[in-house]
Image 1 (tube, rainbow, N blue to C red):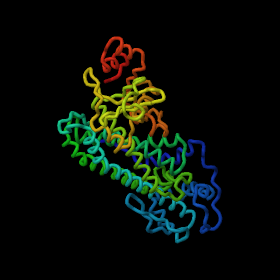
Image 2: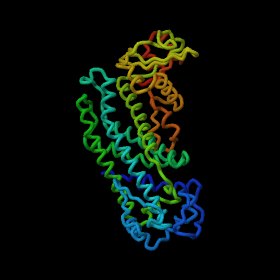
Image 3: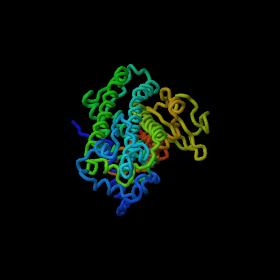
Image 4: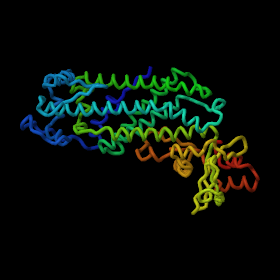
Length: 435
């Protein structure tokens, strides 16, 4: 059984530590003074000025005192937090006074964010079945007889990685404006969720195998298992957090360090953007997986923009073609079958018309990926443990990573035109293209 930590430990505990690690260390706390009902701005400057971190760390019996017990001692008898709970600190001095109110208000905002993020990711999971089924129906001909290799482990792995990067980095940058390094650190801590998806799929399905369309209709079963485990992990993580001593290493004080959550958090717009971001990443990678299962690759020609489509591209609806008219370069996504090249891609037009990905973007993104990393089919998600990913890479680097055969390469071109090899043979022998 794989043991996972989630938001309350792996995600949130990094916030206080990382704020300090970046050089923004909390200055020596000033003594708490003034009226306990004096209204001050709700931000981390007020938190620091009131010395809330020191207040929590030195609270009597704080190593053992749970959040609920702390709230009751400070007139917050109905303050109950957790997944599905809406703990509310109310207004200052109605009846909770400062500095306890600041602690409970920040906890309220943190709990609200965790609930919103959990619900949002759960919603994305619920869309998984329809996304997969729709894409397979759209892009796979005679799907009942298809030899499409469905390894459900990569389905969940891609989804969780999309969540880890797309959600983790987007969330911290949009809510808190933290640095690239911070976003990377948080996303790295979210990656164990990909292990969760892989582990569950492995237990249920066993070894990967070739399947038919009927197996995809059962995807909801796998999704429900993941959703249950996902929510259980969040619920238990929050329970452990709130039941630990407020000033203990695993307590709420660690989460709230520096006043990170002492601010009104409007989660809805961020969650909507996060959902869109995750779906974008997953759909792109799903399209790439489906087409690569058909041995698709990018084929580039110079001075071949002679079609009847835009700027000289091919005009057929079942062809993925783009032409750079200025440089007279033709970019195409084609399929290799034995030694022959097939231009037709089943239902190719839906990739742009339904899913919004143009041939220009897919081909150029693949070429940029291959050129930048000097390898075929580089996957930036594989670099997470090596800390080489930045937020800027998530929506740009290798979203599509088809292997590229560039006929502008002299060796490849010579094999095709001087030695009369087929395009596929020239690409394989001259460029080492894995097709």
